[in-house]
Image 1 (cartoon, one colour):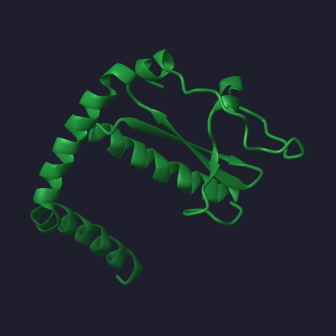
Image 2: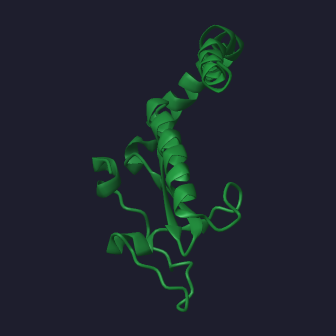
Image 3: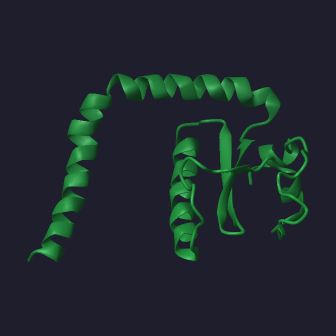
Length: 139
């Protein structure tokens, strides 16, 4: 958690979990966060392996958000086999507007050259991974 997050904690809200839906919180402060069921990506119950996979996915999302200066921070948790998500500000309120403008400018620049980025950088890398997998499966 960044200094900005601890300096500007989210406003407490009532827990979305019913009293007969037992939850063990890693941190007591987590109970006051706004958790929502992630029905879009994980509408079904998760196995522990699913939880591990989605943990890596959301870690990647957070890494990209941080790289692109996007002023939010995403946390997930598996509770009673379902995936819940909370999104927190990654900057103090005073710096949020400036960070949003930097992020927007950077994303506009990237999207302006997305075709070349795909053709010259991303596709060759993806293709190399596919070739590597192909050589493992069909020597």
